[in-house]
Length: 340
Image 1: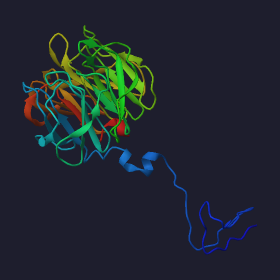
Image 2: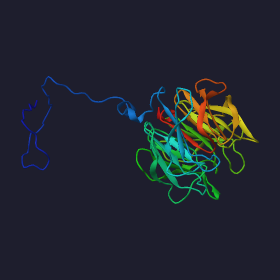
Image 3: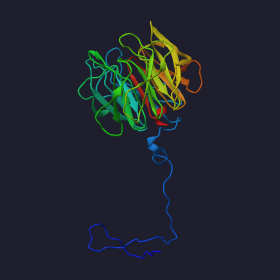
Image 4: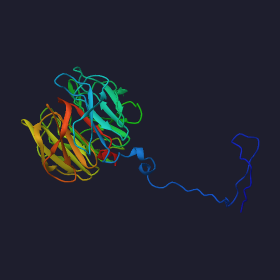
């Protein structure tokens, strides 16, 4: 047994050899220490989404009918009209959004020229967006987004004049470059997206014909998307996507005309979506945001915000209004299902 008695321990590179630990060593003291247990989310709670009671939903950009730069916010657990949060770095629409528990990120869009811009905001505060970076080598419009607590996923989208099957990702906590993730099963745009902590799901869109395809990816990896199943009908617009950690919703959009349909899936499984209920009004080019309890559907040639309880099925109820009627906006939150 080794006994350790020392007034100081010198660093590497010193001429003093210091104390040699040899054999079983015990530290005799009245104090104690312990090793941390649990997963990263337990030890670093900012990685997890905020509690459903305080989760914020943000709705940015859009066309009203001209390109718009405003960002609205709501507290998802309440009801009431949206409040001004601040502005994007520029006016644009058909952009995509994703979020961690700390940051909301708005990417791509139309200004009305195609844009490669990516902005970010700190969701718990209010204020104007800051520059995050750019889509490298291309503009990207008609984008959708989803995320885990660390990675943001964008795609598939349109790189004018081409429809692509590209899926890209960023690291939300840093101003990272956009990196290729893999390919979706179809080249298309105007999809709806949602996520669990493990999977990202992309549904519907334009190929240029309407699509009912649902794809999924494993967010922590890089690889091509796999077939999940089909929506209840081919739909674009996009079908606005949001989720709890287990269930994904895709609401409103365009079939032969604007629709009020809301579909749902169980994210951990595969299979066709099922009917959830109806939004309060048929509309196209809406956006969505969620806590782990509620899903919100906002805008789409209107200022209406609807809400549903994700764990149930049933028709949406009126939540309140956006600060202005607009379409082709993007929604995100700091409490969605991809954050746990």
